[in-house]
Image (cartoon, rainbow, N blue to C red; front, side, top):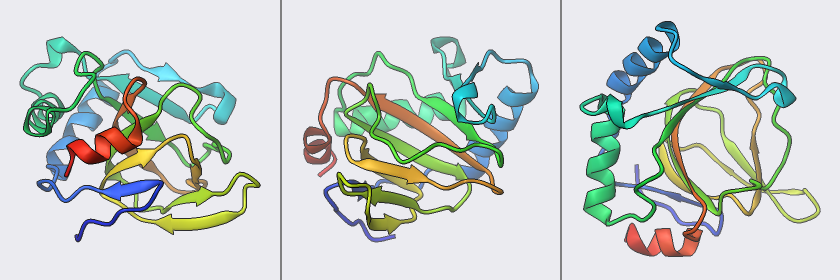
Length: 168
């Protein structure tokens, strides 16, 4: 996939994430009573699992650690998380309240991410496998009726523009 840049999303051309292995790890985490956080405000079908330090040598931990080192990314103390968006999830058009940006691998699902102007008119949409997203731009992914799993890390102190520069 060629890299593309938009003020809201940058598709990362860095090595292909190990999608099949990440998918297997997510299924194991989901099935082994790993601690998850539910987001009932979005239909009760959204939950997250944090990759903990004790998960060293897991596929997600190893992939993310290598990626952070290669690009000298900031905020290494914050671990990535698996995000599961089930078919009954309904996250509205929004700007993330805490993060400035995030980087995600689409592990399951190919629904496009949509971006909107300040009046919430759609201005851009794209699919991605591995991307940096400006979470201060209005966005959403319409998952209803489908399924989506991300391996995602949020950045609360580092801007989208700074992360873009680090990745290039």
